[in-house]
Image 1 (cartoon, rainbow, N blue to C red):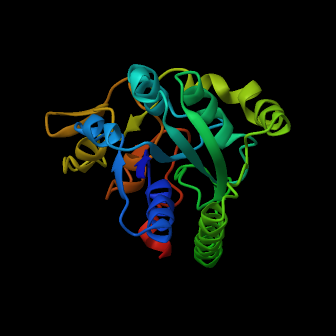
Image 2: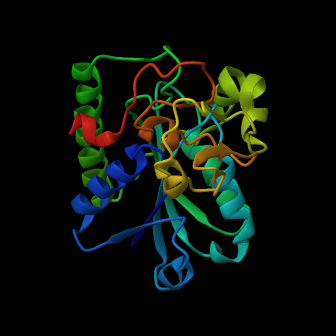
Length: 253
């Protein structure tokens, strides 16, 4: 078994680490940003895929990855873990359907509520204690899921028709278009920016460049919120106008 993930602030990577550790402690995980990923995938028939849901949809960078590597998925058995701030409906299902069209067999799905990573909006902001509890609850749910899988009972969260309808009506119908293309809305305050280039190094789409010792955003943002949460001067915003709280998974461990 191999673990694959895309993660913004670390939630999806973390729960995948817990899953694989519980499963056999020998499985390894890789980011979809790994340039040598194909050789690892070719050597494994079973995959656990972990990712953060955006508007009950798949982030643009991940959907591009799936489609551009269509030949990788045929015959693979895939279990999908979807992390979310509140509710997605069919988070596991929407990625599962994407993989299934290229020949993958979806064995199951698991939904995990995790700390919100949208740093520049007040919606879904929780206390440190509440977010820590969310992570602890997710740990327990993963451990239980793995125990069930070992007994041949794969969780099926987000895979049914009712879940699909819920995901569509609750979010995709209204906001799904936002994941259909990359965003050009990233804003960087040049007065606050100190030119540390941390945002440049961690951006998964190379959407940020340095110009005259200042960070500048382009038009290929996948809304992962890494840069907004990591900027030491809170100079970057995306959906909101002011950074409310910066979060990474390490804050709650």
